[in-house]
Amino acid sequence: MNDHRVAALLLPFCLAVVPAGAQTPVPIRDKVAALLARIEPARLESDVRTLASFGTRHVLSATDSATAGTGAARRWLREQFEACVAASGGRLTVRLQEATRPCARAGLPREIPIVNVLATLRGTTDPDRIYVIGGHYDSRNGREADGAGAAPGASDDASGTAVALAACRAMAASEFPATIVFAAYDGEEQGLLGSAAHAEELAKASANVDGMITCDIVGNTLGMDGQRHDSWLRCFSYAPSGNDSYGRSMARACTFAAATHVPGFTVKLIFRGDRYGRGGDHRSFFDAGYPAIRLTEPREDFSRQHANVTERDGRPYGDLPEFCDFAFMANVARVVVATLAELASAPPPPVVQSAALLRDRYDTRIAFTLPAGVEDCEFVWRETTAPDWQGAVRRTDVVVEPGRRAGALSAVLPGVVLDDMVVGVRSVGADGSRSRVATPPEPDRAPTRTGSSSGRDR
Ligand SMILES: [Zn+2]
Image (cartoon, rainbow, N blue to C red):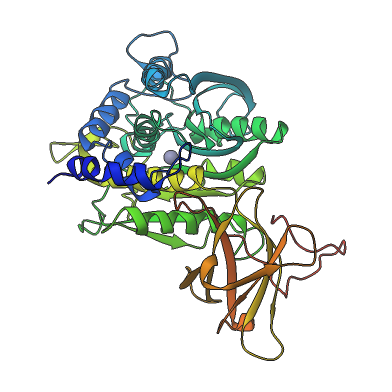
């Protein structure tokens, strides 16, 4: 019997027990499964091939051609995002963000015009809380200032752009309490120009960006060692003030979503903002004070990146679509969609005031406040040296009492020895979705020269 027939048989019982007017939310597990079913490797392949077919998408390339250069690429991207508007019931809006950015690099103009393509899926009940998924649609070859020569940029970064587009196609028809922005950034290769314009615009408006993901170089799985690396993905995150900063909590939200919704595919946490000497669009959001992570293929082929298209041993060479693994890219898109769906469906994270080890036994008391209207939460903990959460318990399974201040709560976690552990709490929505984890301040944060504690954290 298929699921629909089971649902049809169960429906009278559901109607009998649910009071009139009350709505039973679709469990997040079912909601995400339906979203992930909309991700197609063949569509990712055709998108990467189309982006590569513009010849180059260099920030200084042609803007007036219908078939080649950055202008044609962004007009095509805009059309693709706009094709999702109808399914969204008007909640998705698409715009071009145009700006002129300073550039200090030798051989390049002092000022470079950029155009980002931004599709915003407005949240239903908490639209001021924003999540951003981006890839950079610009490309380059071996010469940084070459706006004319071939630069297919298939893995770097048509792949990430196609993932952002796939996420928009999968999610546009569904409702989420929080807002999601799907971005195709310009001018990444000349110093993160497009993402900096977007992050600065959001910061200037005091926007509440609760998480940003950039997918950059997510197309290749054949390592230079000749091995296929297609069952995992790297997640880089900046940490302004330790392993439990907001950037790391965003990274752990990604591992949680992958483990929950994308079985057989692993997200590897790397406690570093980016690779040595490299950068990406998440840096722009980090600099603006927002939690941001970078997803990148496991083993890059450096000989193809920023390479000129040529032949070697009679075979094509360069950052070409034929070297992309579209089944792998589909898994990257699934991780992204699962992470965004969990966070945008969930309530905002709680606020943790403090944590203390009880003086008469080895239990931890955590003092926290839940966002208005939120009833449920989950406590998590791990060894200080463990990369990810090791234990979790729901609110209903521990003793939770009112705290000293109005609205504050206090919970006791039995057997959790705070001095050796990190504890945290995340909000749980009525559909079971989880927010980012909030943690108490570390006890040994050092004062700075100015006498204030070292916190960009929040
Ligand atoms: Zn890139």
